[in-house]
Structure formats: C-alpha cells, structure tokens
Length: 373
Image (cartoon, rainbow, N blue to C red; front, side, top):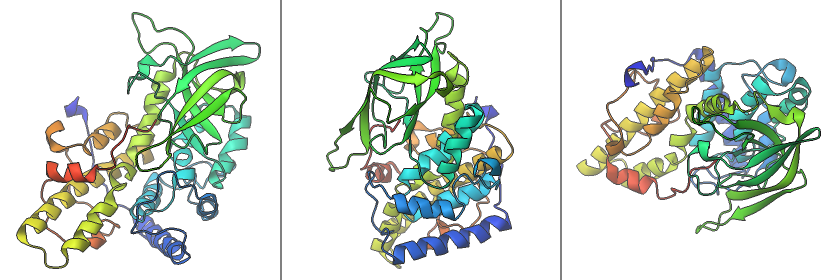
C-alpha cells in the first residue's frame, strides 16, 4: 500500500497568493472589530453566526461548487488557502466548516435536486450548520459496528439508536449520518449501512451535551426515538454507504485544519523563547517546523488531487496519520519538499528545520480528546 501513495509537489498559483492577501485583510478587519482574538484559542463550542454570514458574503463558502447551487466554481487550491488562513488566525469557523468541507460535497453527489437547490445555497451564505453522525457508543472508531437502526415505514424510515461524540449537534441544522438498514453479511461486513440527511428539528431527536473538564460543550450524544426520515433524505445507495463514507472522510482529512488547530502553540513558543533562543530551543522549534513543513506539503498535494477530480481516500488519511508521534509512523512520503514559503506558517518563523520530537507531541496534544464524529 505504501508504494501506491503519491504526493506530487504542487506550487500554489498566483491567484492563490492574491486570494491569500484578501483573506488576511478580511481577518485583520475582523480582529480589529473584536470578533475574535488570534492569540487565544477559540472555545470549541463557540458559535459565530454573523461571522459565518460575512465569510459567505465574501464568496469563500462553497468555493468549488457549481454556481447554480450558490457556489463559485473556483479551485480546490484556492479553497485550501482560505482554510489555511482561517485556521492559522484562530477564526471562529465552527458554524460553517463541516458543511463547507464535506457535507456539501456529499449532497452535491447524492442528494435529490430539490434538496440541493434548497440547502446548498444556504451553506454558501453561511446560514446553516452540519454535524456528522458516525460514532456510536461502545463501537469506538469501528464504523462497521454501527447499530443505530433505520426501519422502513410508509413513506420513509424510522430511526432508533444513539450517536455519540457528535461535534456541534447542539447548534446543527442538519446531520449527515450512517444508519444500519440491513445486517452485515458473512462475506461483507460493509453491507447494510445507508447514509441519510437528517433534519435536526425532526421530532424524536434529542441532543444531550457532553461536558468536558474545560467546561466546554463541543461534543454531544444524539438519541433517536422513532425519528422519521422521508425517502428523499436517503443519500445514495441503500445498504451501500461504506464507499460514500470513505469518500466523505477523504474530504474531512484532506485539509490543513487537523494539524493547524494547535498552530497557536507553536507561535506562542516562538514568542516565548524570543529572537535569540538557546541552542536547545532553536533545535526543538526547528524540528517542529520541519514536521509542519512535511504535513503541509502532503496536504497541498491532496488539495491538488481533489482539483484534478480524484478522491484521495488513501493519501488523505495518510497525511492525517503524519500528525501522530514519530513512533507510530514509517518513512517520509515522496514529494515532501519544495514547499511554497509565502504561506501564513512560514512568515512567523525562520528557525532551522529538522524532525519532530515526542516530547513536543505530548505538550501539543494537551487538548486531546475523543475523535469528533
């Protein structure tokens, strides 16, 4: 499998650098207006609906989608730049991010036309929030173990069961969820899962926030009790959602947000050691920047695959895997050099670049928690 991985070097085109300047100017205005503080991590349960609408008004949501659905038919590389700048600045993206990153593309591919025409333009305007319904109690990350059941009824399906660790369900307008419509077979454990569009205002859905030690309420338990889903809310093939889910996860894991969510820790470290760090500090920061360089190189390459019409279902998780400690990885991927140096990451540090250390990964992951679903 490793031999089949490919991360071609990609240099961002001039239109991306022009866009980068526009996004930075927009974010500077938002910071000056007090919308958020880039030097403080956002509470992960922060909801900023007006900011979302302003981002939508700038044309930065649904950037790659067809204009008939409110999109702007721009490139995946341009969308990458917007994501990168938003995450480095600690902008409050929670309300729109999942919808723009993965839920919208799922609807584009599988939803009936009337649903596309209704929901996609509202995503592009920053008006709706989506959650992802995959994880379930006692199943960990094993999607095959999903037990929340969808049973046929007149005109649709009745849903019974529980999803857990569901990010933003307490503010979500919709969820894209995987439910079991048939039992798995001995020959195919993947059989029997179906993807649904869930209106979170449907009777029979109860959202129970899960408190964290920090006082935040990002995660939720979502309980379904005879919640009715109409037939036109089935997305794609009945019993065949596994391939759809892996495609959706490729979108989820393709961007820079996973390794940039703790980027502020690195900038604060650079600020703390000052302009004349001792040898040990300079070496440590250099190792961190080297790992960041590699992950960004891989991430830009994945964006290039999406731009070429590919679905990087292997490369995207592999890039995500490189966010883990070195002990759980193997060799570096090909094409991990020649990073464009004008991005937000590099403008703040000129330290030497070497490999990362486990010690930093421990401190960098102090906010670690169950994987959102």
